Length: 194
Image 1: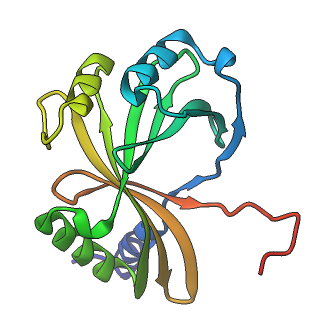
Image 2: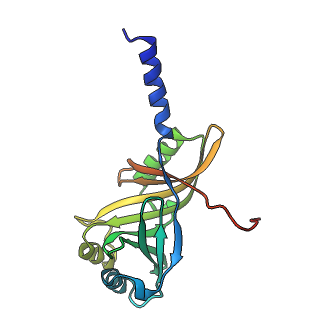
Image 3: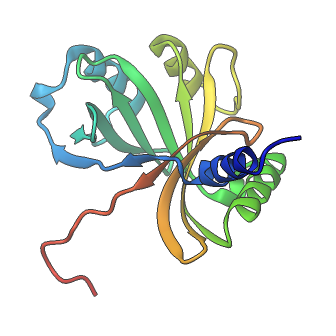
């Protein structure tokens, strides 16, 4: 039979698991097109097709990246690269309602089980893989999946558990399995917000 001390330790550990999460603080700075590495420029030129592209240097807690933002087919695109210009991922903003029903059901069950309340703030489909394969996939219309292109779903939600309310970024696979979560650290404002 398990001792009371060991039982208490296991209960404490299991109860603290939902509290373990990364933190995310990102600060974006505009950057000129001339400062962007050539591989990133080529990828975005092929994908954006003459649309207005805004370039950003994104500084996080542990690393920095380069990000291109633009609209294509009435959707917001965010293309992230490492500092050498190698593709990390492409995120396309979508409405939560447009997700497949099986995925929405899995996500709804996850949020209801983990939190007292939740509100979805932002939904993005994230694609990653070899740059040439991801580019070919995104340039074809009507295709929803392609081998060797990893599809994930990034959800930003305001969640409430007990008395704590916070904004969290979740990353799920196609079946709705949680891959990672990061508590978003809000920036202090230098001005009053109403």
